[in-house]
Length: 505
Ligand SMILES: C[S@@+](CC[C@H](N)C(=O)[O-])C[C@H]1O[C@@H](n2cnc3c(N)ncnc32)[C@H](O)[C@@H]1O
Figure 1 (cartoon, rainbow, N blue to C red):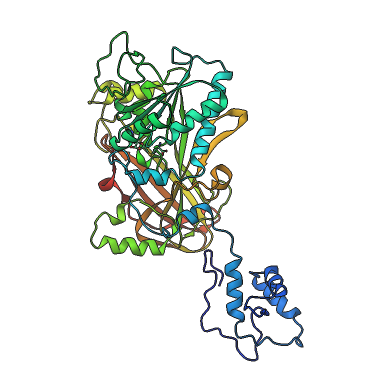
Figure 2: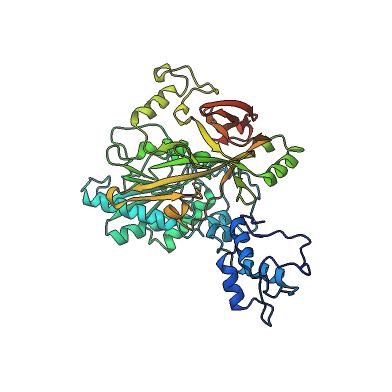
């Protein structure tokens, strides 16, 4: 049997049988390892197809002496073990976390611990890509001679949700490498991270960074009055004609979860967009998309069913998990790839969208009124989403849930190309090889959904909000093809809903 993941082979009761050919003719050297000729032999076809195997056995002269080596199986297994493809960065990093279910972080409502930031900061790719994106944005700003929001001519950069400051360091570095002067603001609501930002500013950034402790949604923007204390969060709503607050040219953030928007990046960035320079301001990332595929995951299903005995939300929670003992169920066919985009968020939003949201807040009718279907005034209605996707499955199978991934465009440099992140197994190598910051997300089905050969799976998923919370609802339907263009619905899953464990805004 050939498995997708190591161990590759499961052998049972298969000691060498006297008088029969060994499955693979190997000879061992004195140290117990295969001889070079045996290795070459084995490497020729480590996984022959049944046709190749039978052709090989037909070619084998009957007169060839039969191997009696009792260690042949062991030697071959060692050979396979040594010649496995190298583990990917995320497999090395996540070793021990395979199929370990974790509730997603909620960095908006919870304050992350320093060690969590330390883990983020180990990513060898994410910060380099952000630095590339910021450098490209600065070069373009300068090439296009766009006006800046500072009186000195420096491009104003704000890192919204700075954590311990790795993106601030990268913004300063991007300015050094491009020679484009910047004024940098670091905005963070976590008081512990704020202290570390201040220390970084003193020790590493020569005090050039303006550190602000504030929820970004309450931040009024960079203070332009030099007599006012830098780092002061101002939450008053009063605006005077001569506002002491300036604008930001480049708003850098990293608020993405395993399903892109599940840590409420859209809601946070909506709340801080008012500080962005209206005409030229840009957001890094400029957009992100969520992606799904149905999977077989019996181990996760068993674990979740076990948890459900004591936890009523166990089957309704989207988990962050390094998927391991799983199989993808869908085949890629034209128009219906194995992994499909679910929805997209783009920043900054058109001003008109935010104006409608603001008008709806508090029940105003000028924004369309009526409130939202899920409750609330409808002020966050523009961040709801719904998607229905069709997946084609040639072979019968069992769906245990949906595997979710994301892609993000940090900066679209036009002809220079896009700087992108991806966690999708089929595009990560092309877009952000070796990035380790995110494991996939898993939306479980309470009960497995069985389907026969030649089926279609239709996946529906909603992003819901009641203006206080955001959650997801999801379901899968199975259809059998009963004619070239005719199908019959065979079954559907229950609707999963993470409302009870939703993300607080
Ligand atoms: C995923 S961490 C990224 C931290 C850092 N930028 C990095 O890449 O290592 C997100 C950070 O945003 C902060 N954050 C989330 N929502 C925020 C909000 N509404 N206002 C200010 N900070 C926020 C969190 O406290 C956390 O430090």
